[in-house]
Amino acid sequence: MAPQPPTLSDRRLENRSSEMSVMSGTTAKMALLNLDLEDKLAEEARKQGDLQSQLKYMLSFKSAISTASSTAQGNEAAVHEMEKHREIGTGSIGKVFEFTGTSMYFKLQLTDSQETREKLANNYKLQLKIGEAFDRIAKISKMELGVQVPRAHWIATPDDKSFWEPNLDRFEWSKEFPKQSRDVLCMERIFPMPQPVRSAIIDYFCQWEIRQAAKDDLANRDCMVQPFLGRKRHGNQGSKLKSFSLRNFKLHINDLQKLGLAPTEWAEAMAEGMAILHCSAMVDGNDIEFVIGSSPTPQQSVRHAPRYADVQKLEAGESTFKLATSSGQDFRHRINSLWLLDFDACKDIPMDQSGVDAALAAFLQLYQCPRPHTDDSRLEEMWKAFAVRYRAVASTCGQREFGRRFLEAVEAAVEKMNQEKQERDKRSMPPPSGRSGGTADPFQRQRERGFGEPQSARNSPIRRGRDGSGQGSSGSSRRGFGYSNRRSGGGGSSDSGRALSSSNWRERS
Picture 1 (cartoon, helix red, strand yellow):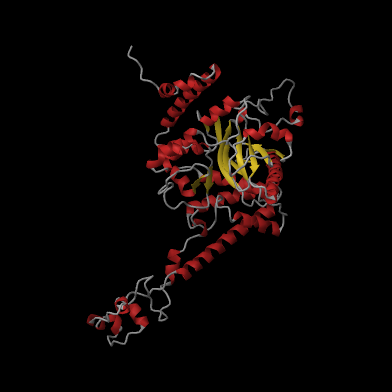
Picture 2 (spheres, helix red, strand yellow):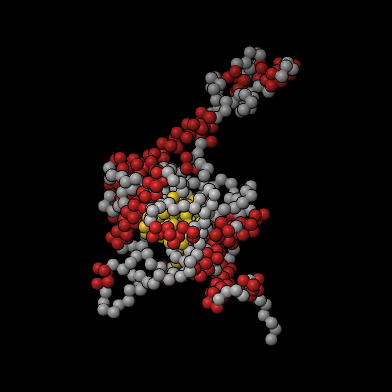
């Protein structure tokens, strides 16, 4: 029998032979299983067709991805072992570390300022409040929400020895972030996008000269995707860049359309999140973020402890597996989900006009959500889907009137912003004469340089005027070059401003 060509797993295993030689038997078996899963995923991806189809398949909501990434392998191998807490990101108020081998992460106070401490505490309190609101509406509506909020577990202070004594030496410290105990918030972790998704994003969006460097960059393991349904991308992602970062990777509405994804589904999920945030949690949503990340498959993760009342309703001896299972998550099988996070700048709002105003002010800064008045039929459909879903969930929360007033306020505010931008565009248009907009008199620059006026200029219609008398006015000279009949000479036609205007939401990110 002819020898079979080596599989992808065989080739990688040969490359890692020295690494495998020092592994325990259990860990070696786990590595072999990961390699086998990677081969299977490669086969699944090939069935989808071209790279665009593969990326569409892997970025779709609720798509379970098998992954053999170093993150997955490290998390499984680290269960019951003491590992370093690896830094995976930095925000405005905290530095984030993974708690390897668990579905938790730590957010450590970034500076010693009192403001930072207060914001971290506010993040914790409001995350508890918002999480409870999401649970309440999910139970009332008896539906699976399209967006999730990570669980806030606890907060520890610098003098809490029960946390800091065993953990101080496990964090990655630096000169800029010195070793010291500080406020720390523990939350449910949003896992990065699995390795196959990261690789496909790089292949699709990154310029080819730096693709391999992007794949080798360890920081790109911590990939989160930020969808922007209220902005278009201008130019190519990654063009003219010397590096390519997957941390908080932005996917704009035209990116999603190009990939063939269904942004309407994303818009409806965002609408659910915003409606619950406003109308159940009663929070303004200032400076929040939507991200697409992953989590261990829900059958193997524990996000809700079984409630006594629910268990009481079960038949004697009935399994509670569907309510909650063991805490040993399968990190190699993860599901993509939309998450809502970062509540440190949020504030409580009343359900009156002042609350509508506060929610509106925050929303207008959030270009991740769809916008009305875009002059694009597809984007208008997406806004309509957002509005319909927001109104329905607001009603479920018992705040139908607030939901109506908020949506009307958004439409009125965006329309006003568009009109103001059009006026600014008109005012900033250069005058039709002068160097900036081209000169109406072709001999003006020559005279300015001291060369006088050539003989041909005296016979030019721009000097003679329309009647050939040589007494042409500024208005008539402009008419000779196709300008409007206005004699003021103040600017071009009124259509120019409209041609150059654009909706506010199209501003560059």
